[in-house]
Every structure is written in structure tokens, then in C-alpha cells.
Image (cartoon, rainbow, N blue to C red; front, side, top):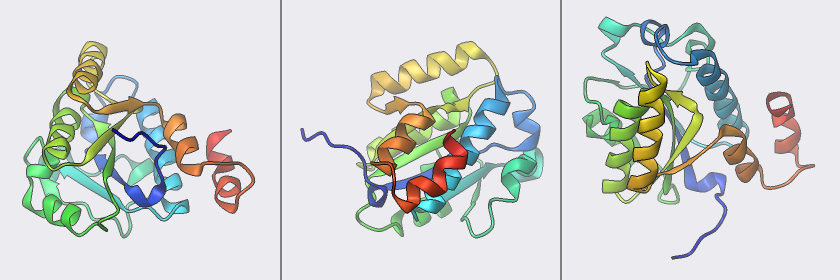
Length: 185
């Protein structure tokens, strides 16, 4: 097994279901939203692909306002599946990614349901799920924590937003690092 630090060309940021009516009930929703914003800015600066989903938009509505305005140009299939990769339109978007993409960076809700099942779907497809622990949550703290524990046991990589952002940036002093500074200080 070869272990190395991630490079942006290996990654796709996958945002799952941070919809307004659902986020109103999520444990530490403000933390989740703020870190998804940071991850989106990082992905844009590093020119990484971004994919998103909504869960039954007719019932759960749009994304929270902080994120809705950032979604221009981002593929965002609506789904009823809990495993986003079981959705045909989402699977088609993943299949269009460059061959260099081996890692899905997962952010959104809920940790123990859609994040967990999408991570399992990624593993089944031979992709590495990298779950951003402070950019995911559930309605209860217990389900959030149990979801992270199960994800780790199943083989997903779990860590905080700042860890993966700095890993992807690789070094200070670059134009990308300077562009990201307002989001990491």
C-alpha cells in the first residue's frame, strides 16, 4: 500500500444535501455550512471538480442561502437514494470525472445516512471517500459521532476541513495559498 499526500487533480468535492429545511435541524449546522463554504472556495481556487446533490428537493427545498448562491455551474442532481452514487444522474457525473480523480471529498448531511451510504458507494466503485468531519453532521450529536466511527471502521478517511485544505495546498507562498488565506485565518 502506497501512502502519499493528496493532490487536487486526484479529488472531487462532493456536497450532499445541505438543504434549508434539513439544516434547521442539524447539530452544529453553522459549523457545517462554514466549512462547506471553505471547501468550495478551495476547490475553485485549485480547479477541482465539484459535484452536489439535493435530497428530494420538492420536499426539502433549496440549499441554505450561504451555499445556494455558490452553486452556479455545479452539477446538482436531485435524488431520493441515500447513497448518492446509486442515483443514475449522479453516477453519470462521477463517470465523467477525469481518470486522475480517485478521491471523493464528502461534505454535507447526514453523517450516519447519506454521507455514510455515499462513502460505501465510493468504496464499492474503487474510489477513496475522504469525509470532512467538521463539514458533516446529523440531527443529533450521537448519530454524527456514531456515523464518523462507522465510516472510519469501514475504511473512509476522516479528518477536519483545515487538514485537507492544507494537504491540498501543499505549501505556503503560492498564488493558490494566498487566494485561500481569507478562508483559513
